[in-house]
Length: 195
Image 1: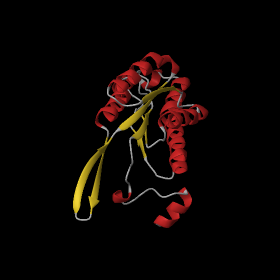
Image 2: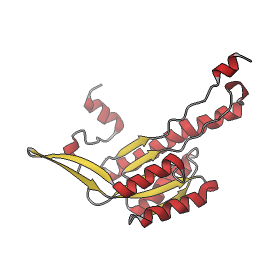
Image 3: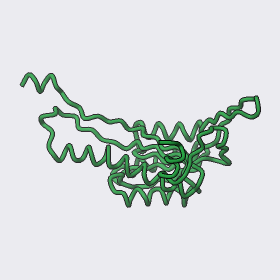
């Protein structure tokens, strides 16, 4: 498939030449599952360090950093963590907003993206970090356990990617969609085989 065919199917073209992207002002990131753990670490690092861009200008090279404002997302049960994360980011001098949304619900993810844009002005970086795992031997898992893992880790990831992509297309400037959550289905094969 040629580049033109891909652009035709997708409906927009992200800048393939890194020199064609020139952000103005702060970038806006949304991190799912960000009230604690790896998601919180990603959100704090983005707020503290910003995003670095490498650009070739004529024959010179330049590296510059752009500030990042952040949406902290998690489920309602983690509201206290969302509030703490927002306060931590604001203490770094960046704007932050907390949005409760369950990534398994496409409508809630769409609302999360809309709230991000309303509060912070755009969506430039989406980090799909929300994920779950079951820590028990494979043969002890139930159909409900496996369905929950698929709902969050697969459907939640896709809901996040699609909603972010729709917004980035609407904005007309592209962006970054990152899958940070790579949870696996733990299998205790040694224990299973020796039962």
